[in-house]
Image (cartoon, rainbow, N blue to C red; front, side):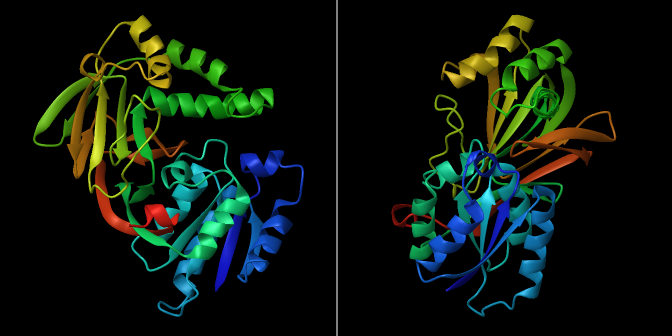
Length: 302
């Protein structure tokens, strides 16, 4: 077995490791009889490297396994190149939060992750897509993309990690929060005045923060935050964290294979897997059922 391993040099775990992660991964795969080319690269370069791998490898030649070490944003950018091909994705959870890796049943332990890759159990899972861009976890519009952008700015300004930047970013988000009118088309047009629309790849249980038990339902989960007081909006993130969200009171919920969001603007900042990007309107979301081949623990492969 041979694999290409791409490691995000700026990933949270690599930055904090205190040892040579690149050498550890190379030696780890060698000890598992896997021929691995291990490359350390900047996060902005990894998507292009993944695209070159997908387009230059010959389908069916037995060497189309791509292992990526990074967080959710890195993995999401790689999934855009890999989804819909026969390339198999292996995951080394090296980010700060690692939501996708957790939902695959992976631990943060690198040795355990390499064991799973070596075992070779493949599962085909769903991905979400908006205007041609793939996301693995979720995408959102409104106050959350603003929050993500402010968190990144606070990280740079204060020289701290994501978790330490949460508080200052939350304060800035609430100061700037406003209700925007958008038109959501699922089964017909649904005009909404909302501070946030959340679109998940498969169903999210709001009582268990960020958790999905199924990645193959073939549906998007859509949550539209209802108009409420400034205090209610301020407390909503904390209610989500502690599993205290009242879905009937706080938001409208839908399940769909696709939806369209329109607003009176040419483009909108959206969040995708913890990163932000400006996308032309309208926003067209869809589920791509079982389009990504990924290595998982044996118990998750069924």
